[in-house]
Amino acid sequence: MSGAVSFLLAVLAGLLTGILSGFGVGGGSLLLIYLTGFAHVPQNLAQGVNLLYFLPTAAAALPSHVKNGCIEKKALLPAIGAGLLCSGAAAWLATAMDTNLLRKCFGVYLLIVGLRELFRPGKEKDSVKSS
Image (tube, rainbow, N blue to C red; front, side, top):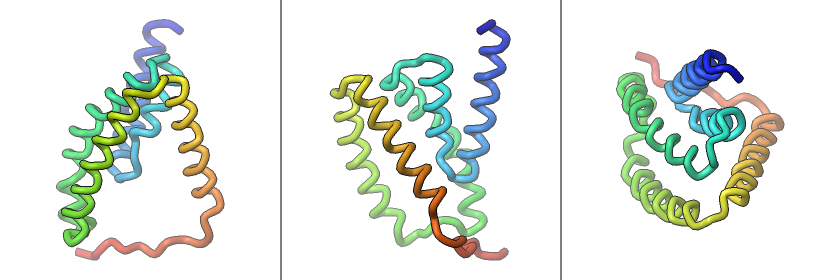
C-alpha cells in the first residue's frame, strides 16, 4: 500500500471513529479494527493507542452530552468507580496475555456485540430530554 493511500486510510479511520465517539457509540472498536487489521499494529499496542485516542475525543463530546441531559448523574460515581477498578484489572490482564490470544478474545467480543445488535428485538425509546 502506498504512503498516500495509507495516510488517507488513517485519516478516514480517524474521521469515522471520531464521529462514532461523538455519538458515544465507542469508536475505539473501529479504531482497533483499523489499527490491527489494516495498519498491522500489534493488538496490545493498538489498545494503548486507543486509550490515548479516547481521552481527547471523550472530552470533546462530553459538554454536548451534558448540555443535552444525556448524563445520568446518580449513576456517575458508581460507574466511574467500577470503571476505574475494572479497567485497571483488565489492563493488567491484557498486558500479561499473549497478543494472539488477546486478538482472539477481541474478535469473539466483536462477534457477540455484532450478533446482539443484529438480533435485538424492537427499537429502544429515545430517552433524551427535550430542551
